[in-house]
Length: 177
Ligand code: AR6
Image (tube, rainbow, N blue to C red; front, side, top):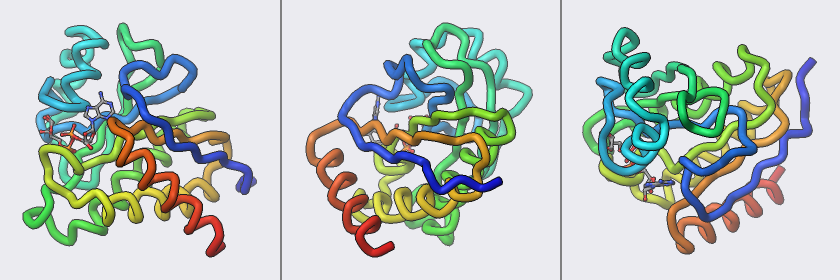
């Protein structure tokens, strides 16, 4: 049965420090290796076992998501998404939306209740934050309605500006519903 009661919240913080969340989402690279930004923070906190578990799952394509254990992170799973490189992986908007949709679908298959996302593609991959925020929030609002187990989605943003932008965008999308 589909649920319409998924709570979406936007907070400032570190995606590697969300202990009350079942699965955290990684802004991965195609090889699923430790990198900078989100991938660096998650792999450092998870320890080398995460990269080892990732090896046979790589490479992944833009828009794709794969799930692994969380190793030394305080979560149950990590969902690794390869976001589009802005202006190169096209159509960027569809590939970015596919990341959020595929991540939620993996979470629901595992019967998870809570997922935390960073702002995929908006760092090294250069996606403009305003556009990425609208795609992320509208896709999660829509896709979460098809999830049976999901109860909460948290967007974990790195600074005040991104957090405020996510909150305002969420409010306006919810008003429009
Ligand atoms: N917690 C939450 N958000 C963060 C954190 C953190 N610890 N660190 C950075 N951000 P990025 P991408 C924000 O570059 O654009 C990697 O090197 C950051 O400010 O992590 O999808 C991989 O190896 C930005 O808004 O992901 C890939 O090669 C957002 O998270 C590539 O970069 C995403 O930044 C992926 O690039």
